[in-house]
Image 1 (tube, helix red, strand yellow):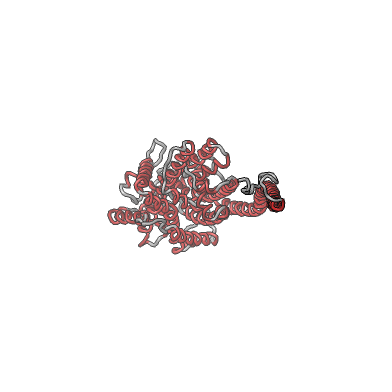
Image 2: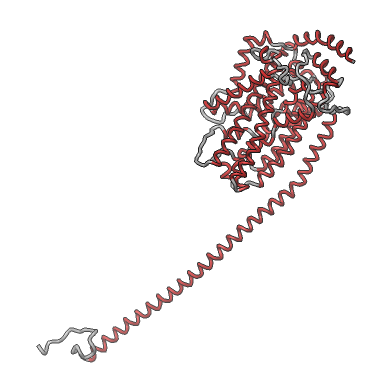
Length: 559
């Protein structure tokens, strides 16, 4: 056993395994080579790790620089936005002064022609001799003076602007304007609609100055239309005007109620409500809606002295005030807009309320500002009922609606107002509200009819005027000649545009149009009783021929 060779073990010191010296030296060389390779690999790995560490430090530095650049970019963008707004405002200054100059020039040229040099103070109307001439003028149209002339030019202007209420219309149209064309749509759209409204106002003012009557457009149509068509033309105009007035009050009531519910939603996030028609209603209430209902002053013609001069002042003053207030209001709104997506997708369904919240960052403050808008809506509704009650009362005294003797009564001793006509109008507005609960699509059609029906009621007497000839009627103190003719043409073209553009269906399936409902009702009423009972041109002229001599004798005796 002593001669048996031991296996080689590299961990046993040299000479202890019984191998020869040559074999031992060969093993050490191989071990040294492997160790050298290991060392080289370790060194390479160290270098790679160092390189990776250096790159990591470089990446960290780049990230720090990127964050600094992002912060700088944000600051630059904020500064650029401020500069852009400043430059935009600087560029707009000249346009503002040009527009202001145009409006002031129009006021200087147009309004003084409608104002008598001998003004009459408010509250002293009953003692003026002009009351005799006003009563005589009304008697020449076939009517007895029933309402007291308690209004002045300023009060009629106040009622007219409260009804037109450009602030309320612009507030409702905020989202549609931004989605359709952005701030440009509002800023330049208001300018365009203002110019068109001036033409509409001139057309209405000329007719109101020539024929001041509470019936307004339906009375003018009766006087200007050919004899064979006068009664039907007047009857249709009266129904279109009254229906437009009812729908206007309904839309104002709905918009005001929606704003109140939106304030509750903002302060109570857990509360949810749906208003499927709101989007379309907002879409309809555009710049055109903000200058609608300009005929309001015409229907107060029998409640103020010298209406042939005062009504044009009220109408054109309403347009001027509406432009100045709404235009600057829009500019202030757009300067407060921060997040468009939140405004258009607000859970309150009241975009203006969300904009107020963005501007203030405080719910209470936003609700306070929205409350001011609600207040304008409430007073707009009051003015709307004042307007439509006079229209209903005047149309009823000529037998234009069923049960005319009931709705044509004036409550003497209770303010001398047509209370019955007012009550009827309020009931119809409430009924339309119930219709909205059953079918939001039907109510959307009703709101669409606001602008269309009113413009149609304006266009009919203007068409009759052009057919008869502008120089073939007795002109009033306010008459602008060729400017008036141009205004008539603009009114007719714009009416045709609104009929086409506002009559497209906005949803499927398409339901019955509200125009068809209105036409159906007036058609049934016309054949059932209107063609026999409606007091049109011929009967009214006969009544006027009997009244005028008596009134002239009374006027001569008083003088």
